[in-house]
Image (cartoon, rainbow, N blue to C red; front, side, top):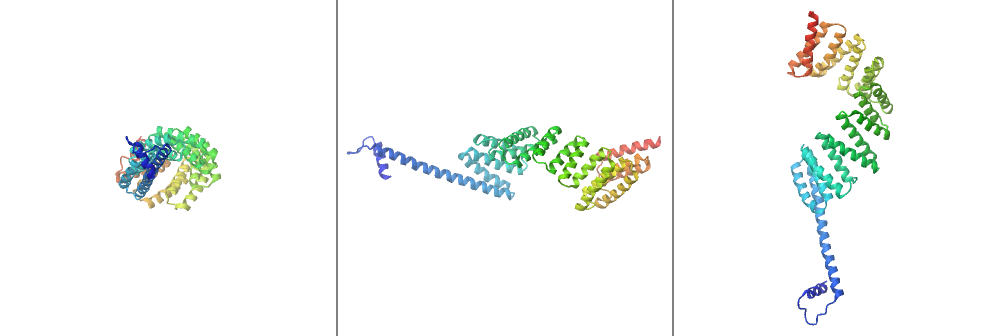
Length: 382
């Protein structure tokens, strides 16, 4: 190496030493060796920078998990500086790290901007179906939904679904994206599109939860017969108190009161076993059963059920609770159907007193009770 270096130096002199004879082979060999030497040092530098970048990301991740977001952000900013020198894909990953911190700090607008930048870099430097790009896109979708940027979320979800379907990547990810798109359509009241997405999930996996989700969408459209059908299909796959509850509700909506009663009682047995008779699901189910009795004209059963329900609510929440007041309008309606005006009047007065005691006079149920009481008094005075 020393001989080669000396030869290169002598060859570069304007006036070469006496007796010097230029050796082309030795000169070229020297250039090659010098180039290899420089490349080795450059690679060593790159390896060192990459190692530092990885260590900073790991350190930032540890701080993030501990909830030290300011420290984590400072460390990831240092990692960003290194990543910019290394490659676009590493820079994109580090931007994603910073976005995660912003997301945890509820700075979701900043997180969305960072993720958009990260995703573009990742797609350009790698490819759209690369695991890094898929993860960044998934996170960006979630942030867009949080920010109510539904149009952008829909575009990203459709792209994610197309990629997952085309590349035959893990089925669970594909199904999860379909479920997310269905939920997005439901949130934006695009129920027909939500139904299409849910049917696509069902075609791939006929699980009880997928049947239940489809039934819920038909319930929202008030297509009770189809809702009933899919609730029953869901129950064939797995028994659930919640599915039984909504099945009974769908039957009651079609005036199938005997079937609704039987299924409500089955649901109630599930809820009592899991949370006791004073649990929120048990109380909701009991209230729905009482309303079904009232709608069916079985007033004695309805009154008995309402009395037991109100006693349970009073014991659980208190005699002046909003939870107690929330169910009282149905009790009043049961009396009105029987022309029991004085009993209905007492219930409306009870509702008003509870909301006034809790200083909740802005609640819509308070205004509704006052209006109903005024109409009732007008009728009885005529």
